[in-house]
Image (cartoon, rainbow, N blue to C red):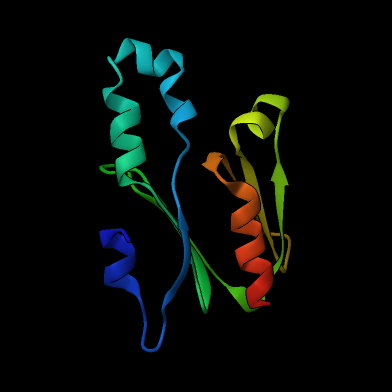
Amino acid sequence: MGKYVNNHLIKDESVVYETRYHWIIFLSLKSLLTLTIAPLIQRALSEFVITNRRIIIKTGFIARSTFEMNLSKIESVNVDQSVPGRIFNYGSITIIGTGGTRETFHNIAQPLKFRKAFQELC
């Protein structure tokens, strides 16, 4: 489990599922131009976590972006996978909250397991 999530767990909260960016991010122009350093840092410093109370997603290092939403405020978690995504088990997850909040995260490893972990808690 990542450092950000460890430092931001509340009382009686525990991690149920954790994933990361898929290795496919290393097959990009960004990876080629930075000699794979940028995707390596991106993958190492990003956290995609489902706890027994909320979903916590943290990306970035210097320019950090965080997304946290209580499970009771989430209407659905959608998964989109292309043909290569189905073959190599990666895809995009879209979290839709009550009130129309919609956040999409791309190139996530095992997105169907992420959705299943969320569904088992609700």
